[in-house]
Length: 314
Image 1: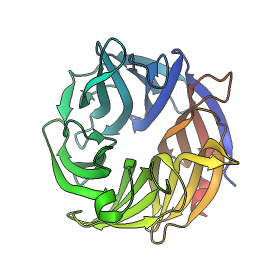
Image 2 (image 1 turned 60 degrees about the horizontal axis):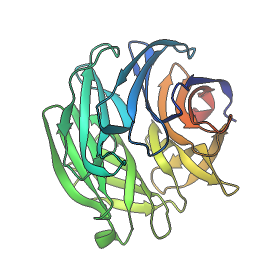
Image 3 (image 1 turned 60 degrees about the vertical axis):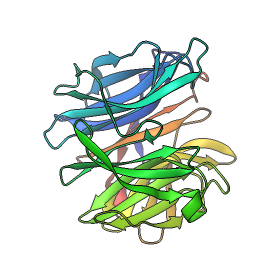
Image 4 (image 1 turned 90 degrees about the horizontal axis):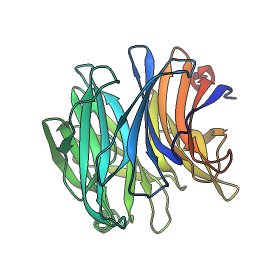
């Protein structure tokens, strides 16, 4: 069984602290999340924390843009060793109507100070997350009206382009509203996990080989929101996200067979209400999981858990 060594509340300053990303940088953890009045308010800003591996906050910085709701920040390390932050920028009217949206990136060499923002990908398509493979970033973007995801690749700060439109769509695959996603790579193989919010609401496991133009999809048979993956070995991945347990949303960790999509529940993190959107770092036999939850005082706060990872490989 997986055991939680400790769980710490690391983000609770705003009324609503949520939508979490995590990566390792210089032997420390960088955690990013949205601070706002509520889940869909117009005032979203991004908080970026530097933490040690005991969960102590060493430094915090913040990014905000006037009249813009910054949503769902994600963080990764570029091939040059810089920290890349991405987020969805929703331009808002005085009564919180969306009047435009862009995918934005920022760079940092320290995690403390950040470059000016730069737009990437296509407007109208929400680029959810990027993963690096052979010095290229890859990511799916979704569009609700199109009921589809597009695959992009390149360098988000300079030349990031569409490489496969409609990689999963209602029109071609009879699977409605694919949206949030993650990617992992093994040599020339790519595996994708995609949340869906239509018809059966079941998540999809995708597989493709370079140049990632043709995708095959397996229906996982259950809902998984805000999914994130970590490759454990050739055929197995660790998967986390918002799952349904006893008719409630909770944040769960699962083991997934990449060949057939079989899922095994490993651990339910302390979570309820508005929750999930986790991030992973595996470091020296410990799994660090960042996520948000409202299980304490009905307030959405960001948590960091340290979990003994040795059982994952048994």
